[in-house]
Image (cartoon, rainbow, N blue to C red):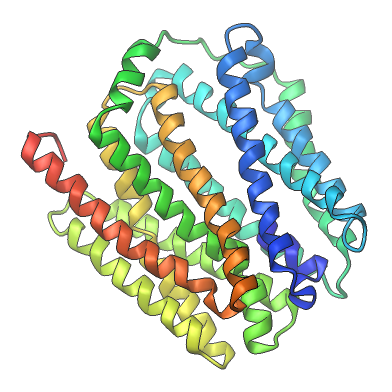
Length: 367
């Protein structure tokens, strides 16, 4: 959402990259608070913690703040909206993992990958609808996003869940012990850098394109949809190839393609080169996430919401801290360095993937 919102607020003109970066930090803080609250109070208030209604209402509050109190209103209003987004993500994530754990047939990494596939559809639709409504530039155009969380809240209130909650296959204490193992740490770091790469691009790509090529904010926001679409296409393709022996080569080749796409975006001076670079970058990074989730499923064949939520939380927090640090880099140097972090992240992903597969080979774990 922030990647679509910042250009509407005019941050491509304000050049206040530090303030822009702080929004991502507040999303991370909000997510951590909401996630910890859900973990601590789940046994006492299960209907509140595991319902999607609170998350949907928090998202509604965020959209209203974004739409009615943009710059030049005091930045605390916009930061409050970013914190509300983080709280909403944490609340909805708790509900999602609980629902997956409650339905025994869905206790798998494949099911979670399916849900994240729908998440990417949201990452495609959000910038599309904002870009179509944003001309002329007006923050009230963000109200076009309001029906989504309101629809979730209303539908969840009207329909009572019929899910029979199954008992966890393993105790939470056992899952925590597993999380302390090197494979879980490596996989958490893998998602940390992967989501950091993706969300840095999703957060800063429109502003980068506007300043680099002088295009309109709406065209820059369309770039987000193009990146998400390329990511979705790549993940679908990788899912169909995941059982083949050359899957590992595809992942490393994809990282090379992502670096090539980032370099093309960095040095291009025309819109065609930008679209081509966006496509290469999205396709290049797309294999990492499904392979990481498959590795998690193989290493932890049981599904425990705590272990999956912990690993995913590490990745999501990394995904928010990366664009936050990007604000400092852009402030100190220029917006042209926005793609440096994804390129460095691609190198770290290569190292972590190699270590993960080496650990699996040495210990004889299923790959």
